[in-house]
Image 1 (cartoon, one colour):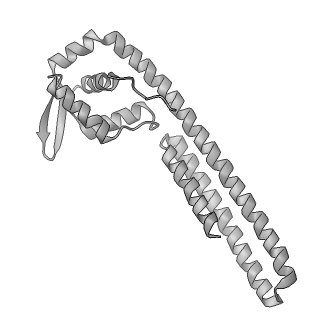
Image 2 (spheres, helix red, strand yellow; image 1 turned 30 degrees about the vertical axis):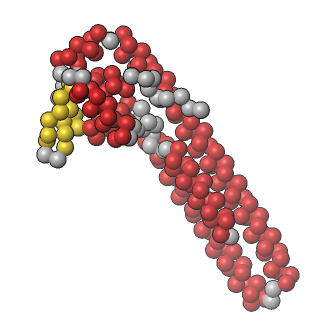
Image 3 (cartoon, one colour; image 1 turned 45 degrees about the vertical axis):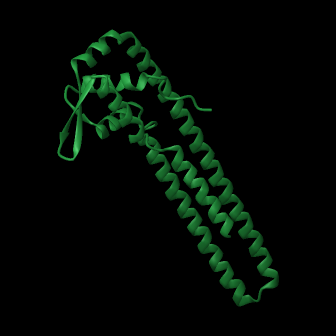
Length: 200
């Protein structure tokens, strides 16, 4: 089981530090983006994770919120800064934990990508073997005209597979280089391949 990114109570302290560093107020979405940036895109908290904690910080008088059009701006209070100062050593430990979490999450993403690429190669190899077997079969039992049409369709299918593999591989590498290749993307790829195989 994957351990949590933040230990209990650490995310709220980290939110305070982000607000203090900004030197200005931040929208909830900006805080989510800032956390995503700190983790290189390997961890992006949901609104359902961030907003309840901001609400709790407001209740404790550590942040204030002000309406800015349709958005809400959160600012750290003097009490919030005092808590940060009092827990400075703990915050240093959290920063070290974030670094470890980024490495761990990056390893998990890398492993997922490798698994997906192995699965894709296996699927393509299996499809090629099946196509060759089908071609051998049709050469012996299907009349010439149908045999020619079947081989034409086979060539078209193999070209599509090659184009798909190149396109997906390029997209996966580009996302991995940007740091936004998620485990969900890899899972969606695997599910899509399974669905295609199931329809053949």
